[in-house]
Image 1 (cartoon, one colour):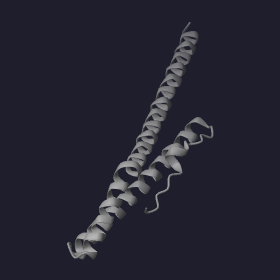
Image 2 (cartoon, one colour):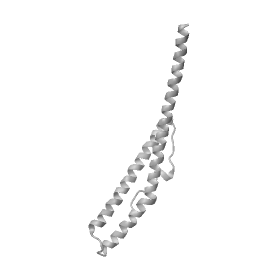
Image 3 (cartoon, helix red, strand yellow):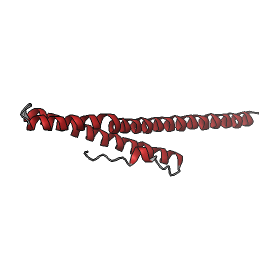
Image 4 (tube, one colour):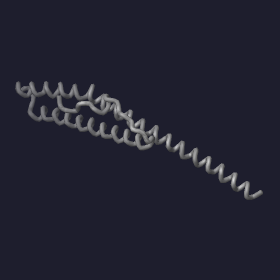
Length: 125
């Protein structure tokens, strides 16, 4: 029967389309989670490793400048490097927030980010 064969073919096609959509959704979820995790790790790395070192270098340069050992330009360059690092940390935190919003949109559930990733103090030390 041609009508029955056509109906079975349509059902098979619908199942394949559904599976394709599920795979696409899953891959989008994995990508969003990867983006979120990577951004959170980068924010943490900046906070724990990069920014404290730049702050210490800036303080040392301040003392050296006051003692006349380095020029103001060298001290200002370290200040600029620290501000650039703070800006990068902020941009990365924004990326993490966007990825979290995408995860919430895809899952339809409110996801509370860990305290370690979103509420870090990014003010100068």
